[in-house]
Every structure is written in C-alpha cells, then in structure tokens.
Length: 195
Image (cartoon, rainbow, N blue to C red; front, side, top):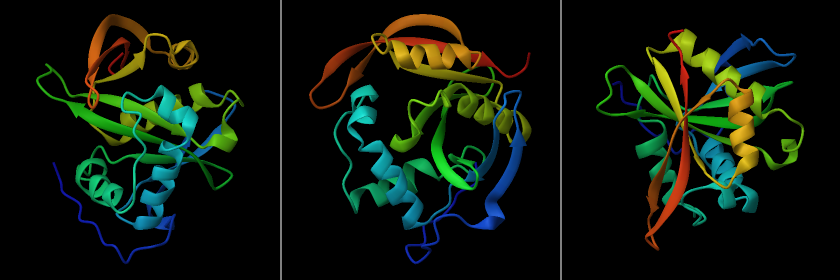
C-alpha cells in the first residue's frame, strides 16, 4: 500500500492532473478525479458529509469539525494510493464522492464503498450511475475483486440505489455505532468485479 502525505498549502480544489475520463453503461458521462491531499477537497467532503440528510443515513451521525477532519482525511481517506477516494464530476462540477476501504481477511481483495452526493444533486436519480462509475473505476485502476455496501436496513432509498447499480443482497447483520454505543441493523450488498 502506497502512502500519501498531506500538504496543508495545497488549496486547489480540482487539479487537472488527477482527472480520468470514464464512460459507463448509462446515459451519463462522468469525469472521475482522485481525491488529493489538499484542504479544499477535504473541506468539500466535510461539508457534504455534515449535511443533515447524509448524517441521517450515516452510521456515525456526529458532524465533523475542522481542523480535526483534516487529520482524519489525511490518515483515513487518502493513505492508500490504490483505494484513494474519488470525486465524480458532471460537466466538470463535483457531484459526489466515493470512498473505498479495504476489508481485511478476505480471500480476495475486497473493499467497502460509501457515497456522498452533493445536496444540490440529490433527487435527480444519479445515484446508480455514480456508483456504476465508481465500479468501472475500480475495475480499470485497482486489483479489487469485490465491493461491499453496508446500508442501514430501514434506509430503503439507499438500498434501491445500490440494487439499481447492480449490487446483490448478501446478508442482514448488525453494526455497533460508537458514542453512544448502539446496535444498528444493516443490510450488506455485494458487487463482484470478477464476473
């Protein structure tokens, strides 16, 4: 796993050297851009993540604060060069961020996926196409064999989005949310990249 460092002086939100063009099997044509170690991108992600609708769907519903999120972003978001999160752009405007984290102790390289859609782009039925764009990115640029989505069992809208993106039901289980410690029923869905 390659390591990235964080440079607090890098402030450009979207640098042209990290853009990758991806066509999906949908009617959407998105640009994919790897997240980099700069504060403007981290602040954009924190803003989307702190949106009330996003917090309601998240396992940890505590809003993030700055500058603590900058440390979290550097240590947990962009530390792995293969699984660096990506922005999905439409007409060169960021509309979503997809984050991937490797799940250890699997027989083949498996990652989870989380999605943050910019609030102004919600309700436009872009979720499945955004997720499929992320899947195509993983197929073309990583060695990931499978992707797992963990969704709160009562969050039917998110479940439908992942099903429309091609994920299949794997199991229902529980995840314990920190502070306050509370079990949350979740549905796990899988997308096999090797088929």
